[in-house]
Length: 44
Image (cartoon, rainbow, N blue to C red):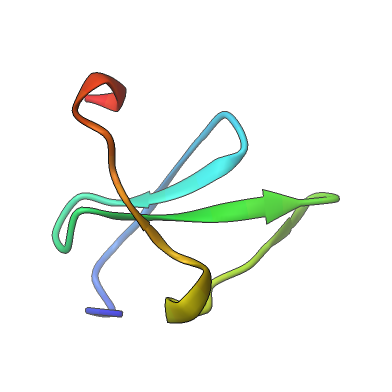
């Protein structure tokens, strides 16, 4: 969403800048804003 660097953790791609995470399904990152979720606090 913000075009900043991201990181991979478990089955998610995390964007710390906009506090969103995107799922990885069958080794394919789904980088659609509609598929994103807020990063839970415990994910750190």
